[in-house]
Image (cartoon, rainbow, N blue to C red; front, side, top):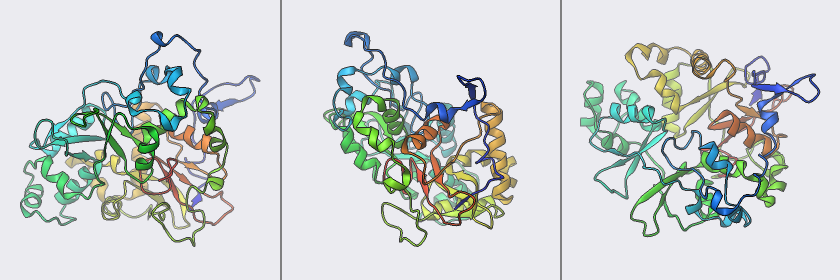
Length: 396
């Protein structure tokens, strides 16, 4: 995959501030390419002793509480990051659950209301083996409504196509999912890193007895936590200073066979209809797809979370328009919601350092970045994603 030099991916307007010389402005990524400074040491009783990684007010792909992540116990960070107990990473907030009997529409509205990317779906109160409802399920539901896929439940398929309410508990059973992992709060980061690094998007953190879910830890939240506190973990410095190529992140050789750790790039042509991108994500069991032109230049990215832009009947014409057109709609929507300079930086290079890559993910709140070759190269590359089975900064 190559960089499209005439595309917003390589000429993105960035938030900036005056440089020390006054001759240029530093981009937000340049400012964040160095981990945050270590907070001034304060007595333990004055320091918040936990980092917000719970699902309320946000989950998985959304902001952590900045004031909470800034102040961490010095005693916690004096040890190696791998040994930090998960109990140190949970804020005691109420989790948001939905009952399996509510409709898919209600579950989707709950995602939007609380700014979430997934919800535990309980068959009964206190259900410890609950499945989760996320945007992959919403994508499957939309494809069912449009009669684009088949499932082993004729009643559910019929209700979808006739516009009847469908229980979310039925939909989540129909979408292939990773195992729902649960870890006790007494486990450490080393354990959860191995799970999240295998392609699992999120892990439930329970109490010591494993009878109650206390929080959810996602790939993206973990990346943000490690980045925010990187200066306090000196053993991370050699990794942060290494390039993606040196670390072997991404399949940079197009002839290499995909493995369970480095999967192939799955892409779609920009002139293909959006409905094909949604269908391809469903059949390939991926949460994001690269949009490329006929020359293999990266045009943009479509994620399952973008399904929220086509949930209303009035938006259905977008499904039959091109992926390239849909990308422009997404960028315009983000600009209106978050400011004209909010367009995402969604690519890095094989020569980019791990520090710069993490900085981009954290600064742009992106789910994934694509590794691209400079314009002069025709070598294909692969995605680097914080929540997929492709090569990842969390090394799945």
